[in-house]
Image 1 (cartoon, one colour):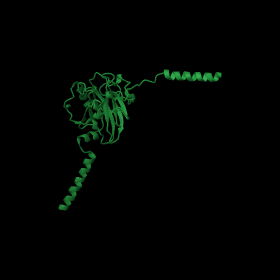
Image 2 (tube, one colour):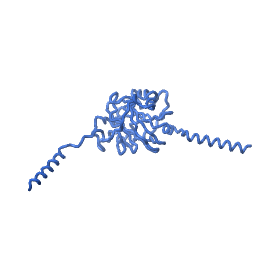
Image 3 (tube, helix red, strand yellow):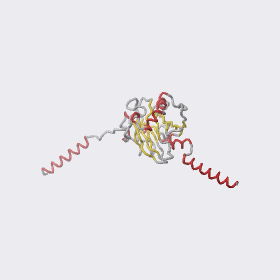
Image 4 (cartoon, one colour):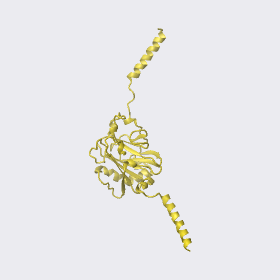
Length: 262
């Protein structure tokens, strides 16, 4: 065997050894999910964020001190409890997710999915760690992107996800608490959802423990801005354009009827 061949073989074996000796890069998020950026502090937010900070945010944040496994009452607001698995958008929306507060022993991760339930294809993280007051403070938010009419939005919490970056599928799917009850491996509802009337806001309250824990649903509290049109849809109110069309039709009908009577 020639010297050149020996050198080539030695280099090959050395490289192979290195390949086996060096472990793959560690996951930086549970389930390897990407994290939406940028995250904006409410104090640096735009006009919509400032309006939220001055109106619903203080009252949503105060809910962390209440047992929310009971009829929800927010002074000054009318809310409608909806099926959290049916957060279906009636119109296209540029969605935003606000962190309102938490009352948990876990460092939970918070995510969303517009293509299916839980951490499957399409899922992303909004907040890797929702612990408060650090790193999260009430009002922190991320813009989730634009979703088409007909999209079913799923929101989920990964129990203590910030401390378990190595969570993988399917081994740790029992740690994922989704708005879609059918996706929760313990068969329990972990989220309550409320449309807030005369606003663009959807309030979400989570129970973060597999098996239900204390079932107080104040472990993570989020507010999704999905647009006023979609909130009106939950309340069954017609769109302003439809009201205008109906008004025009009524006016025409009254004119025709009046002419027939003369």
